[in-house]
Image (tube, rainbow over all chains, first blue to last red):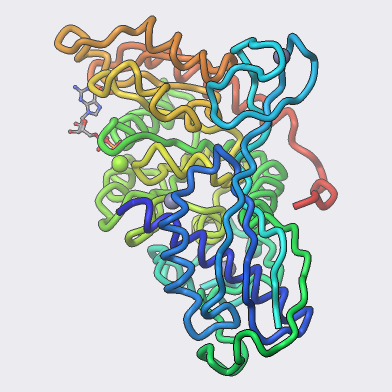
Length: 117
Length: 299
Ligand SMILES: Nc1nc2c(ncn2[C@@H]2O[C@H](COP(=O)(O)OP(=O)(O)O)[C@@H](O)[C@H]2O)c(=O)[nH]1
Ligand SMILES: [Mg+2]
Ligand SMILES: [Zn+2]
Ligand SMILES: [Zn+2]
Ligand SMILES: [Zn+2]
């Protein structure tokens, strides 16, 4: 229940981003939305799809397909002295196996692009 | 209602938003805690656009094109949070975002803290302004007001977190005086408040000893973004199976920089350490106070 509520709030933000773009770009309908979600974003994809479907009715995004792209998370490896990509918070470094990585990214929920008409 | 934009708040109600007004003694103009980025930020939730229900276009027949967006949907919150932060820093207001599971003892601890530190005779004579984010009732705000501090309730309805926009409006209504301490009691939830910056100086996570010492591992995000963990209800330690050292080790695993202070709002045990932290943190805010607002930040 909590998750659906949370994703409703996120869906409303997502719709605002889309509508702002519609106002700028002058498109009438959205076919597909590509949304990148970081591994640490605490988002339930199914709840987000549900929220988006409900809130987009009657808007420029009515009926649009939501394509969720999992972009993992980034972390700093002290041993390798570089940023690496992981899929969960406690993952070990994919390069050297060290398991005390410091997370640096992965909370993002980013609208990448829209297919519009 | 927002004096900047005249917005309503949709489902969210900020208690006393119109009736309370501001300036009960603080004087001065509207603080403009948040700068609205109209028209791109709308407050009506659903803005209807175009000619309504789909079917107006015939799928498959029309030419499609791609529109690059590359925008984080939390950017809107980030913009409000940085406006709040500029306002708070400019006025020397220490703001703490207090998070926990429901019932961990946030309100009890805040009320006791306010009572102890606001006394002018033997206390610090600090002034507090409290934003209450607990759900459904104004009960918690009333408990805070009983201490004499100004408090405002944000009813988030079924919402599961406070966001920076709500907090901006609450700050406007509260109109704290320069140098006050702003305590924000977030919705009892260890998940999504972690993702919403409110513009606070620090997140403080309250964990009561009745909850289990593995909680930092179950909710790593919250412990990762918090600077201080208050281990609450330590008077109950003899009755529960809770290992303080293991809890700290678990918290350090997700956040090597986190500080831990063990307190009991009931017996007063450990409170001096928490008060010392609060004084030191406030001193930092006052020292870093800027004479003029910082230049616009990237949102
Ligand atoms: N034993 C004990 N109980 C406490 C303490 N602090 C709070 N409580 C109790 O815990 C319950 C929840 O407290 P409350 O402050 O409302 O928690 P909140 O939901 O986090 O704001 C209440 O019954 C309090 O009386 C404490 O230090 N010791
Ligand atoms: Mg409470
Ligand atoms: Zn939430
Ligand atoms: Zn490595
Ligand atoms: Zn507003």
